[in-house]
Image (cartoon, rainbow, N blue to C red; front, side, top):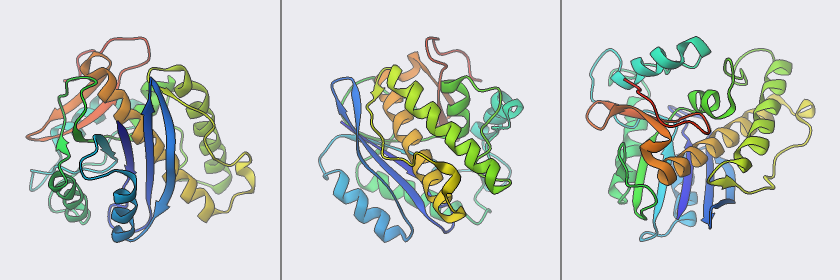
Length: 250
């Protein structure tokens, strides 16, 4: 089973891409990169997973947007549960500039046989896709009191926050089930990175988180994950904190 993480460029810009391969109960890194034009993204995708191969694609983008205006139920639930951590989701509707690109990405995955999976039978091979949002995942998995602000702010502050995210990924995820296998080829010194280099690493780390959360969803289902929303109105999968069962997410 393979797990593809996609930190999708919503309108333009680079897309972070990660492929994890399940070997026993360990997730081994097969690829971690960024691509900008969507044709290059799909070319990478075709190289990672064969047309009949089982896999789950976890996308950081709203791939189901049935509402013409306003916000989706899952976006409101994300704000309800995670707004106090500064991890509320950006509201999505069909009138926003990114809607066509993000929903088209989900539609293309559906055409390739990856069915939306807001419900799942754990550990059953198949071809699935889910939507997720990395910030709430970091709150739950790493026990943070608020998000690591590596996306906005002064360059030195973003470098520090991204280095902290790197540390959490490489110290916490290898202790969970399924376990992220090390090493992960990432910089050892974030202080020396330029803004452009930092953005590329940010996209890759977000895609790695996406791939891991996808694997966590496939392995545990609702026993250790929350699902905000549903297939009709849009949904976001969020892991429950390690060692705790899933709780109400309405």
